Structures are given as structure tokens and as C-alpha cells.
Image (cartoon, rainbow, N blue to C red; front, top):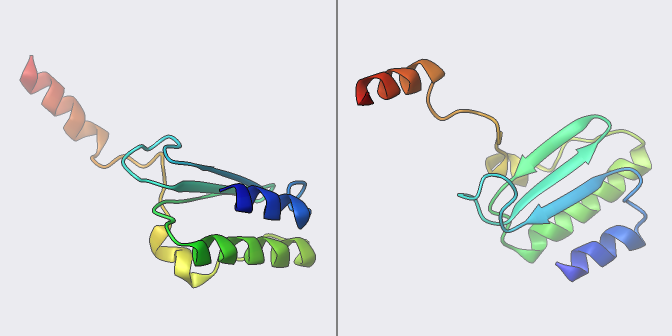
Length: 102
């Protein structure tokens, strides 16, 4: 991870695109969680495991900085995207389960 931090700084990406990574960043059931944030919004990625994926993120961020707009992430990240705020079950089912437990 030190490589990633250093590379992000050396390429001058901090002012344009914020990168946050953690073993557990909110949803702890996914390892190696990364959020990429800019004024356009945030993207959450989980299960980032390979150096080539981190390199692809840095390269994408450099292209995004040069384009002066938030470019789409490479397709290899599509399967790793997730919404940390999405419920796995509808709220109504959860309420029914609570009522039945009483």
C-alpha cells in the first residue's frame, strides 16, 4: 500500500481524485476495499487483490486528471463495484422478522 500512496502523490492526483483504501472500510465482509472520490461522486470497489489492479487504478486516475473530468473506470473493475448502503433485504421483511421475534 505504501507504493500506492507514494505513486498517487508523485502523479499529483490528491487534489483531483481522493483514494481511500482499507482492509475494512465500512462493509467488513469485503476485504481490500477502495473508494475513489471526486467532485463527480464516489465509487466503491471491493476485493482488490492484485498489483495490476492497483496499477490500473493509478493509470486511470492519471488519465482522469489529464482529461479534467471523471472518466469511467476500466471494465476490469465492473465486477468489483458495490454499493455500501444497499440493503440486502427490503426493510419490510426486516420489520416482519422483528415482529415475529417478539
